[in-house]
Length: 365
Picture 1 (tube, one colour):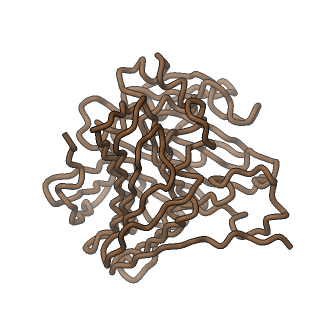
Picture 2: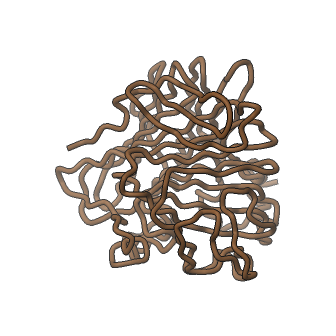
């Protein structure tokens, strides 16, 4: 039996969370929240993660070999400007531990990306089931696409909701030929009515949106939003997983619906019930080079790449959280931030409030 590379886990634990990052590839390998005596596990781990290497394709990229949790993509998708694996060295190579405290982990990518240095800071909240993530991109030259890549596992059915969007853009090319549920290049501003390949509209708020399919869709943030959010109310898990972003920095949310649409190894039809909620600054799934010229996403009036510079620092702020589902809720209606309070409102009953770091989504001039 072939050896499996041992995960190089670096972990931190608070009263509300356990977090572990695999320093070999930089992904968020474990994220568990302790909420009222229960353990909530919001993110997905690929079923082949612990399988012997000689049972897997030899050309499998590290990001796929160790597919789990969340990882930072720089660039997002195809690395067709500077040579690197898909989703960049940030998702495929080593991060060095810079500092570990009782409350945070700081790591630095060993490689550079377009000449920039990238730092990762993971800080689980000590007073709520939240993980604050920050990536700092320092220096460099050119323009860079970026995105987070958290994957939420939905065991049976779920309801997706999000902050208002100005456009919903289906992928221009199928991830898997004949396995897309959404009509290619479809555009709408209604999540509940996206053109489907069978001539009928698809409702993206009800999960899953199909069986034996792979689909990708880009949601462009409404210009009025001060905070971008996504939420998945999961029936089997009886919880709510939610994600927050700064829409000024990450103006799109890209949804990867993966539900048994890949029959070849290592997927083998078993990668099911997964929703990637990929907040970024990118041109959807088109790749790095496509984001540097006019494209379907930039046509909606948002940036699709970050401009680097020798004295420039980009701060990418991102939050993952989870709470138990109130019994009367069937969907999340709104998530708001006001000072040091995060409020989650559902379609019935009282809202949920959590303490929140009011300075987290600050800008760097």
